[in-house]
Image 1 (cartoon, rainbow, N blue to C red):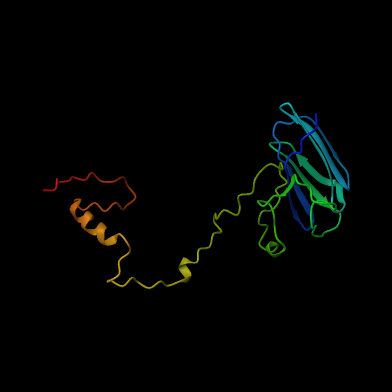
Image 2: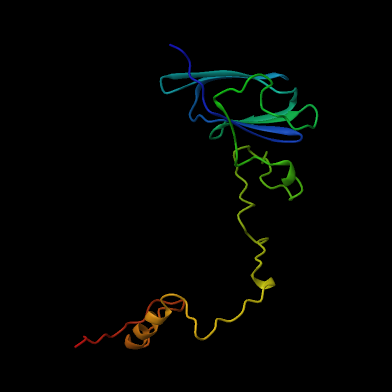
Length: 186
């Protein structure tokens, strides 16, 4: 029976490559990391997966790390700082795909580590880009003009009579809605 090829995701920085083998609960795993290539084989269920990738340029094997906490992840330190045009120097392999979640373009390099590789445990995700305390809204920089009293947002004209007939309940506020008494219409 022929072996299958798992999806292999990759991203890079000038000094390193991050590689993920998209397989979980791998049995009989064999990994061989050399300065110029990575070989992998393992079984998931009844299927055997294996591949060998020859790197675009040499890596520093002794400075590279890997983890098998959830998926199989590698942090590969490049021998020289440079941007690789691909993971491999040969033809493009159909099972190798770009890891867009971890990718950083050259024009993103100065933004304080966006999507930085997390080497602590290798499996932790960096959620630092999701807004947190450093989020800067442009709202306070702009003075927006007041709406012309003759202009009302869509639905506002229809909502005003409804609010008046509902006993004053406007639907706003932070608490639970107040009990509204309604009259039947004649």
